[in-house]
Image (cartoon, rainbow, N blue to C red; front, side, top):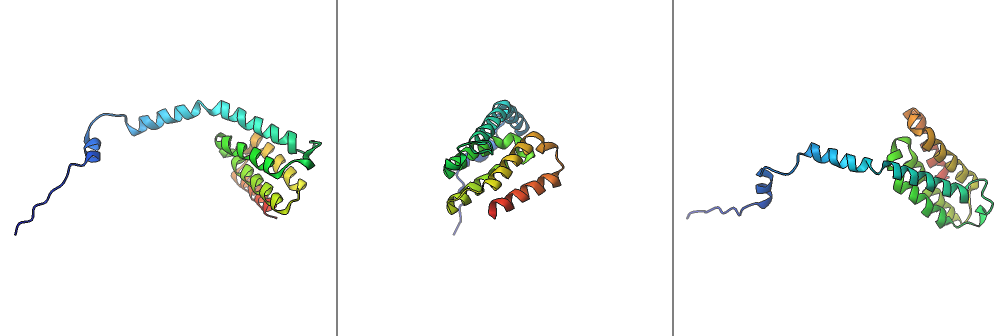
Length: 151
């Protein structure tokens, strides 16, 4: 008895062996350039989102006690969405902590304004100088925010 082996042509293997396309390093450089083009508009959207949260939920907001928990959560998600360019400052992580706080307030059906105020202050600080803070100080702030949100 004779065994015959049959191998169908592998299209992917043929494409890999073909010359053409672009080099991976060139593709990465092009992708980085495209992302960099979004930096200014994303940071402007981040600042606008933080200002909007401050206007409705900050200590100076007169009607904040009547605001909805879901509104704070939704507004904070906008910060998370555009905070990728400020990730080295910790803004994204602080915003996630504020979302967790809004969620816990919703579960308790009661605002914890001291905790909201601390988060808003931390977000402002991290946005302004977070990238220049030593990593251990920034980490300490973020860990403190997580503890406040979980209390």
